[in-house]
Image (cartoon, rainbow, N blue to C red; front, side):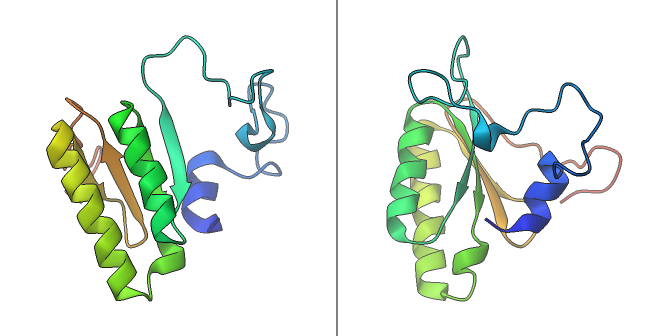
Length: 127
C-alpha cells in the first residue's frame, strides 16, 4: 500500500511508540477472522485498488453500508482502468444515495446511503 497518505492517517509504529492506545490494525484479527468488527453499525474500510476486482470488493462494502477510503495510486498511470473504477464508484453511490470525493491525487472516499462528504476543509479552505 502506498505509504504517504496512510502513514499520515494512521502513523507509523515508530512514530507511535509510547502511546498505549495505539493499535496496529494490520495485526489485529478476532477469532472469526474479522478485524474488530463487533458492535458497530458502520465501518470505515481502507482499500488499495490494483485491478478491477478490487473495485468489486469496494462496491460490496458500500452496498453493505460501510465507508471506504480507496488508494488508487497503483492504477494512476492506467487511465482506462482508473476511469472505469471511478465510473463504477459513481454508479454505486448513485444507486445507494451515497457520495464520492477525492482526497488529494490518489485517494477517494466512497460513502454508503445517507452519508455525504463535506467539501469544506476543517480549519482551512475547500478541497
